[in-house]
Length: 356
Image (cartoon, rainbow, N blue to C red; front, side, top):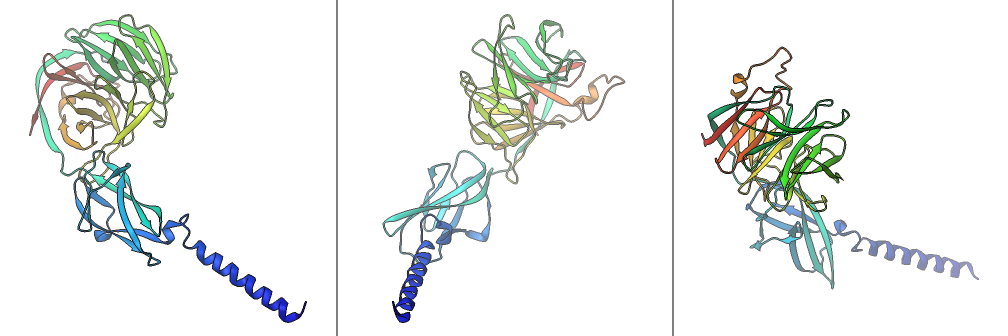
């Protein structure tokens, strides 16, 4: 083979490699090399229902046939180059663009936050009644079933499940948890009591009548147990993060979640929960406030300021302002009032919530 022929073969081989390499730049497997999403104002934080200009940066001048935008697999409305964040679930989101071009399509994405459309309303309270409460009950969960109060208490060595006569404070029935377990929230559904533990990664299911343990369940993506409530169909579980999880009462599998958000930020440390008429009432860890959360969207619609309530407690020598905080909220459906207490408080307060 002549030297000239060898040089020609090398030239064509190099040319073929370059063509292949350049074609890889257009490979749909690398869509970010072709397109990116640009949002009006270069923002990544928006309000629910906000309308924002959106466009596709076409890096290789492809002939685009169609673009659709999605969040949570739901297509967004597009009009005159603007998209509307008319979505039901708020928080950290992934905006996807599906781009059709040259008889193919690719998907690209952008991380954004979608927050509440308005700031939370501020609420206060009126005390209607005060009742005695065990000052050795480190309250983690509180819920009424009919006219009887059920309570879950925490701290290793004194965690328990209790049935309480709220008027007298008398404990009618009680079982102790193992000394290694830190009890957390509880809820009652279909004649069963569901109780969380904090860091053990396990929850308990009891028979409502005799407190007999029926089963246990493991946590999924939520690594800790904080608060628990139900809407008659599913359980709501908080884990100290910005997420409130939906659990099937049959399988106890986490089937989704919402994120708690205001109009300006994503908020975490949601603690004890109570569900009332489409809203979740949630204690804030180590604070004297209770959030009112839309159970569908995660929007924090209101904040109840219970500041001053702890001043009415008889504080013993072991009282700790950081530890012995407000925790525990239960709604009495017949009286249509809320009952609140705290960790090792000697009083249970019946209150009416009022917008300030």
